[in-house]
Length: 358
Image (tube, rainbow, N blue to C red):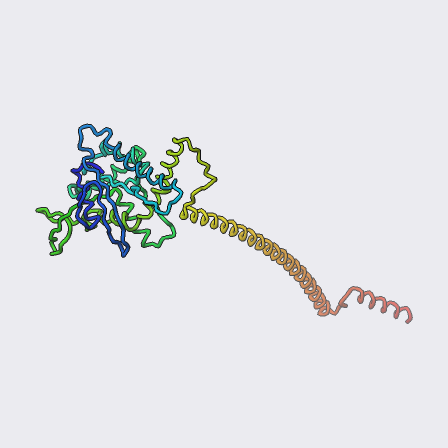
């Protein structure tokens, strides 16, 4: 969505793999990895082309909210078997490749719509900028959006995914805002291939070449990797916010404890978090019990060690005493003296008695 000079209608052609037959609303059946998908692209010709563009965003916002109202009406029906979801799940906002900051009309549009639709900023006609200019322009765009507190679509990150999927998602996130080149013309490349792109005197720009632009990553995000996430964010966040505002404006007070709609993915994540919390608590308790048993065992071992050391010390002292006694006996034997003082007194007493009898 932006000025028709940007080339958004041209870009929507390779996105559908079919020539554009209508300018306001184009519906096409595409196939991705064997899955057939009906894709509807709503174009906004003439946006930003007027002298006064102060309210240029209003018809677009009205269209988005009208689709929300239609879905809300279907939800309020008794029979919901034939609910048709025609809500807009993504808004590609095309930015002129000026290389400078965002224009006031761009900021105003995105500020008005970022709470109603998944905003995906796209740099149009990126072949008019060098690689360094594209990188600098992307940084300025993200800085302007953060400064004005404008939320763009943030692809969710899942820790349970495999490494290949995580790397692919991170690469897509790093490409935002996408710098794209649109073309509905098939040209010959330097190596003889036929590819959709643009031919210039200095070379050929290929739409589906990731070395030339980010169109492939944009298409992957829209119809392959993040299609369901876009729809879930529209339904669970943007639409629910609009629905709550609409019902409050009508004077309908909502009791969230009754007839509360449950998002299966959010419920699963909540149960997983609760289960992990319980496991962590059990693990902590087991560690505490284990540590207590280890401390008790260490205390017993220390007590046994002290008892063994005391017994060893007593035995050592007893052996030392016996050694001293044996050394003393040995010395007495070698000197011809009685082994003990008692025997010496006994011998002296015997000698004295014999002398008296004589």
